[in-house]
Length: 192
Image (cartoon, rainbow, N blue to C red):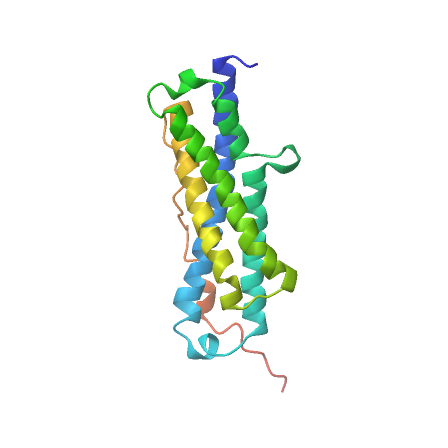
């Protein structure tokens, strides 16, 4: 078993790496919902028409985010795993030092397990039938949003407990991610 100092240092590194991946997920989610709300919904040609391209885009977004989130929530193949870090933290109750109770830690661990199960449950039926419509994706998108919010909150909390410093996981865009839609690049060029 690692000393408290060794565990604290390892947990700090792992939580920072998990935070980086979670920030990437949150950024992708933010861009996706900006696209839906600011480009697709206000445009009747996109919003009201059935589009194989938009179905594919929505399906790929949901599939990719679900796979990435499940990897973090399950810690498959020895990769980064927030539940594993929390399970190891339970072996060092002195680190909790009045900031959180062992019961709250157990509840957070259970919530992550439930998030993984909910995400898996919402994704599996849709993937099996390869449905990509908005209505088919609705349950998966709710679970994705819920799981991302849960993991962000959990990473922030336990990073603070382990390091006594704040981990910034707020999405910031250095430029407008939808600026690509400010000119007509999608119009095909017709040969003369």
